Picture 1 (spheres, helix red, strand yellow):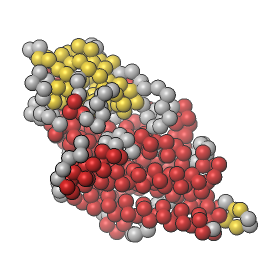
Picture 2 (tube, one colour; picture 1 turned 45 degrees about the vertical axis):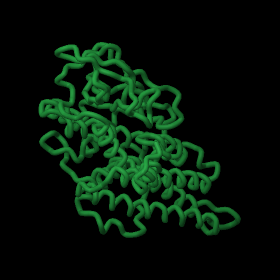
Picture 3 (cartoon, rainbow, N blue to C red; picture 1 turned 90 degrees about the vertical axis):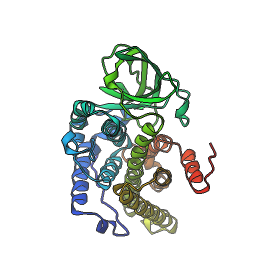
Picture 4 (cartoon, rainbow, N blue to C red; picture 1 turned 60 degrees about the vertical axis):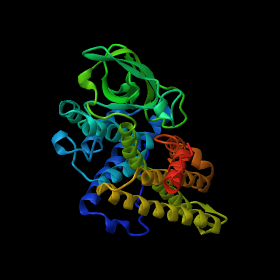
Length: 391
């Protein structure tokens, strides 16, 4: 069974910017990751199986809807707290962070923000408690970066709408109890709704043979004449503003989470470089290895400062979608580069399941694409600074 030896790295004393509550939350989640997640995650990733027994623990540490008000089962925490939780979870595994991120930002957030009071009271407490697991249906087989061209649709049938279409690459789909789904109505307006497991015509086939996020359950949401009660539709939101605001929240969590994966790879590489001896001395004594390690901690530190500032802006409701895109793009690319460099420091040992580096690297190949691809986020920044859309 794997022993988690991780030690935190804070080169610029960023902890001084955190409150005592932030540090307590971090320690709580980190302790849980070391005790419950790290010892089993390599085995589950090798078997390509999601460890469902972790769901209760994720709820207990506040990973489901931490910024949702306590009246609806959340923790009522700030956005930096949410980021810290995502960082610590992804330090353990991107797929586990993804489960919590989807539940919080893509399911609970839209229900709280766009749902009716009846919907909030019905769904949020059970989602926060982990009694129900949700998924988010936006991406389609032929429409990823261009969600406005979706073909999933609803037709007004009186007391209900008839939902048809399919969504693809959906985290949590195979075992979700409900899905927040976006579809076009007969006027071509994009509407959001909650589709519940058990509604006739709603199926969730699993996506097999993944090389990435292997410990996360991925699947499709398929709708074949599903009768969705009108009470399940979000009452007031129309257009892409609804789903894109959810993605902004999720991308913010990813920006923090990617730092966790990078920190874990750096920590592993640093420890290994000090312990591994070649030519009579530790490989950490050689210039090329020190160059790798020094560049790793430099990039991590830059990402920490970028993301902390973004969290402050988010707390003040001043963070723009373009700022969030910049952080998501920068931090995931940073983590990917660090995972690759860390693997080189470990040599052949870096590809084995004895260490987490290759698992992080494979996971990050998904993270760099989902919730907006690396290139799309670059163009979002380009549009923001020039005022001209390139897509």
